[in-house]
Length: 422
Image (cartoon, rainbow, N blue to C red):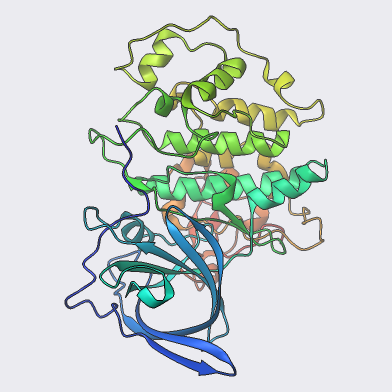
C-alpha cells in the first residue's frame, strides 16, 4: 500500500475564510515586512474560540525544507519574537490533519502553533503557480535539534552527558504520553523532530505532518515513519497498529543517544529487520502474529538475542539499558508506556532537588503536569511528582493552564508550576 503524501492536505481556503490572502508587502528600516490576516492557533478546549488577527513579520530566511515544503525563520514586527513559518502545499484530496491536530495540542513539550494563514503561489518568485494554495503554520521558534546536538558529540568522538540523555528522553516521553492520551500517534519520532533550547534544556516535539488520530478497526498505511526508527510491525506491513509504534521509535532514539549512532541502520525494510534480529533475536511465531496477524511467511534464520549489556558501551548505566529493553520489544502491547517510562528509575536523577544542568542553571519545568496528564495513570503520580515539587493547592491554582493543581494518589497536593531543579 502506498503512503498518503505526508505534505499535502486540504482545507477550504477560499470562500468565507478570512485567513486567506490579504497580503501586504512594505519596507521598514530597510527590511521587507509582510502583513497577513491570520487565525489564532491552539483551540485545545471547547471554551476557546479562534480569532482572526493581522500579523506582520520580517527578516525571513529558509531554515529547513523537504518533501513537506519549506520552513522560514521570521521575526514578528510587533513583538520582536522569532517564529518559524512552515509553508506546505495543499492537496485537495486530503484533509489537513496536521492543522487539525496541532490546534488541539497544548503542552510544554510540544511546539506551539501560534497562528496559521493561507497563501497562493507566487509565480514571479518561483514558489508555485497562482492557483495553488499553501497553508502557513506560524510556530514558536526553538533553535536546535537533538539530531544536531548528537551529531556534534559524535563528530568530536564524545558521548552525550548522561544527564542530557535523561533530560531529553524524559521530555519526549512526557509529550508522547500527552498526545497518546488524546489518541494521536505522531508516526515520525526521530532526533530531527525533537527541538531543543540548549540554554534551558527544554525539548519540544515538532512536525505533525505524519500524525494521525488512530481509530481501532480503521486501517492505516504501514509505510510511515522514517527509516532507522520504524517499528517492526510496520516492516511486517501491519495496518492496524497502535501508538506503540511511537514508543519503539523513542526507544531507537534513546539507544542512538547512548551508542552515538543509530541502533538499527538499514537501507530497506529487509535490512532494517536484519539489524533488529541481530539484537532481539528471531521473533517467535506468536510475536509475529501480534505484530501482524496477516503475515504468514515465517522464513527467518534462528538467531539468538544479543545480551543488552553487550549492545552498549561498557560504562552505559544499567538503568538506561533496562529502559531500552522495555521499549524495544517485538510485541507492541509489551512495550512500556510513555508515562511508565517517565516514572522509570533511569530518570530518578531528574527528580532529585539538587540536580542542575551542566551550565549550573536549574532544570527546566519537568513536573508541571496538568490534570489531564495526571489522570492518565494516577497510580504513577507519587513517583512522577517528587516531594519537593508538591505545593499547597490554593497558591498553585493561581498559575496558568499548564499549572493545574491537583492531588496525588496518596492525597498529597500537587502543583504544576514547579521547575525541575527548584
